[in-house]
Length: 158
Image (tube, rainbow, N blue to C red; front, side, top):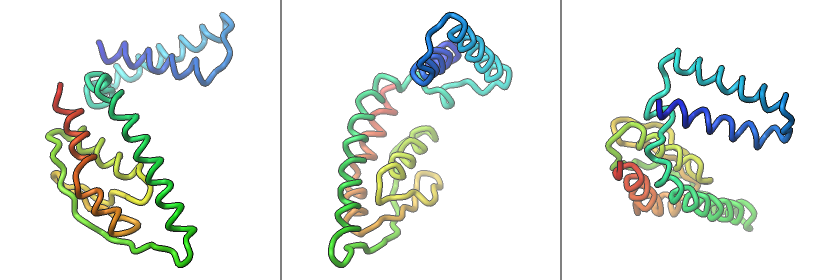
């Protein structure tokens, strides 16, 4: 039930932010639509710790800012590579091992890699990821394991 309540609050908060209309009628319709959505999700029995990971919320609030900074740094790096004289692009494919124990942790790690410009997770199988990078140096940074360590730290403190 905790997941359903959290999902409902998250959906309603997002609805309020995107709506911009706060009259009684419009807000009531928003509440009705959120309740209907949560009812459907409960009826489908898909509201659990993986689809709405409430248990990661506190630790995710420290991970997201770090990931955002990494995304900005990677954007700047990619822009420099593309706009430099004689582009410094040397695509590489590498294998990265993840240390996450759950599928949810591995998916968060794979998505974090893909969200970072210059890297794309192409395949994942039992904790082994195949990653495409814009340049070998970018892959070397990934192999240092800082992102893997942070995702594992976020996942382990359940």
